[in-house]
Length: 98
Image (cartoon, rainbow, N blue to C red; front, side):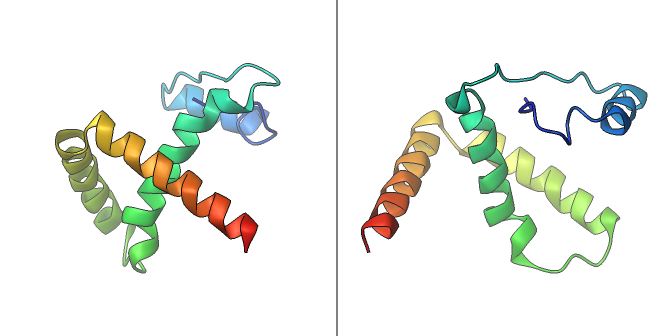
């Protein structure tokens, strides 16, 4: 799921997706909540995998990414995901107050 920003809608990105046989799906316009689940998933992936270390190679990252996806899909329930979302919202709210 992509938003309708300039990167995912650029000709070069769309051509690359086509070449890789990746079917693009876009959120509806003027609906910021339409992409919220995707954005949260990407943020979680960054926090739990990508930002943890400097990766030596693409191969190493790819291997660890596959392991992370398997772990995530087997271990994380919808309740856990909802809890993480609520914790994130609470943290954002508290940061605005301070």
